[in-house]
Length: 426
Ligand code: PMP
Image (cartoon, rainbow, N blue to C red; front, top):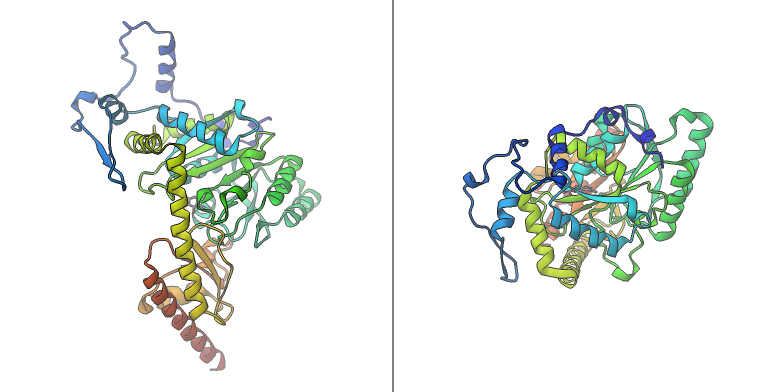
């Protein structure tokens, strides 16, 4: 594939770091070489001498002194080498990408960092991209600064609709051929905010349209391991369907290990990942060493079976949280709200047909009712339009509190409807 045509002016202007490049000469160096080329601080002066982590089963992991010394220093921009090897092994096992020999994996500061850099790499202001609505709000924050031309694709209970996608592509080609999309962004599994998951047939149809109309797919998949169905029935990822080399896949440890470690990773064609690495050389320099080591040591300790056991436990936990929120909604919100059952993840996406704009309701009066949600307009392409949707997260609240909060939400909605009615009749 010709990747250059997908790059934004900013990405085309990027150059690799001259200082980082000097390290490549070390491949041919004799042991006597004295390296005066880098500006790293003296590691002997770092005040940390030992690090141990205690896991939830009581097991203590002690970071070996040489590993600690390495990870406290500036590290390679694409990530800590042993972790990269583990991520590659995992990606190969789980997704078996058809273009593996020309692909790579890099670590980013959560997948958000990878998304922001990938979008900047591709989009010039006014370039077209395909996007589902509702769309993850923090992606819209990235995009609002890049000012793309949005081509909106309809969604239903299985996520983005291929028929709608085809219609959008055909119409654009007919009416504004210079506005054909370079890029598609989607969250295929347990989407944020809708909780919807796309099946295999859909993914195959969408991928074949991507091949036909030649655009890159950004597959943002931080909830991959939080899909509630039988793991045997999980649909293949876009990465595993990628025979052309047009998918960048974004994974994250935020939802399955810890969000504060800020470790995510991007998998995809090497020429695109190289540009993201150049961007990192100019921004974060390298991902934090100590948190990469924590993940690496944890994965080593767990092995494949331990990892599976861990994510199975997480799925069961979040599913029971979801059920608590659905039960509370059945009890208190029937007739006030509509919602679909999330297939995974951590959110319920409510529609409030009797309320014109949830933002006004939530911002003006939710705090007084001891409950807070995200107004749905944050997930819409036009955030200024009144929106009847809202998002509730069930991940980090006790089931008892979920019941109380949903009861308060019902009162809030009833009051809002009464207020609207009194204003309308005044
Ligand atoms: N994508 C989606 C769909 C998300 O929900 C989130 C987290 N809210 C992210 C990306 C960012 O995750 P990370 O913590 O890995 O940056």
